[in-house]
Image 1 (tube, helix red, strand yellow):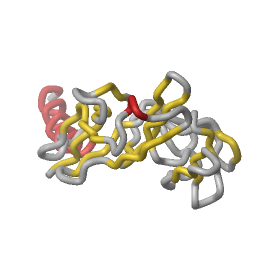
Image 2 (tube, one colour):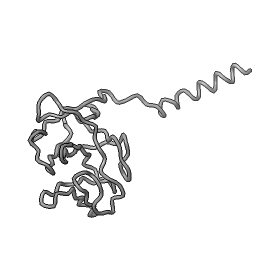
Image 3 (cartoon, helix red, strand yellow):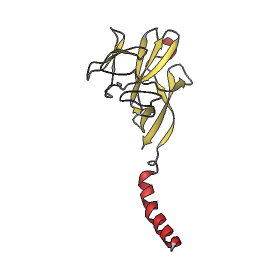
Image 4 (tube, helix red, strand yellow):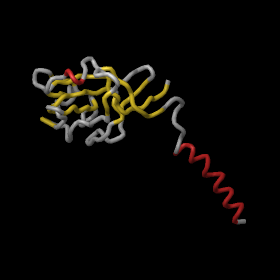
Length: 159
């Protein structure tokens, strides 16, 4: 009786597990994504930023390395900024930490501005003015084979 009851339980639970842990969609894979910048990293001046977008063919996104507010480590971004701050280069996700709107570079003020609710960020990603509660999220990156190419940790979402 116990064996039959156990077998029925397993037979009833296994189909449910497929919905709890589905297989990744066909063609989806994580790894570095090559991004060609409009201006090479080594030619950026102090306090200068360059915007980039995730490739659309195949559909790709970047994986946030950290976050807070509306962003969290592992969340996806479809664009970013590479910024030179002194001798350091930071790469940020384009998503505002308040509600995830895309921030824009304000060249004149040297800030990132969110058009949705007015948040402003310093070029080092820290909050200058809310309602954003926390800094912009970083993207994990490394220099590519040429000065105008960077490799950003991302995911191909499928074809």
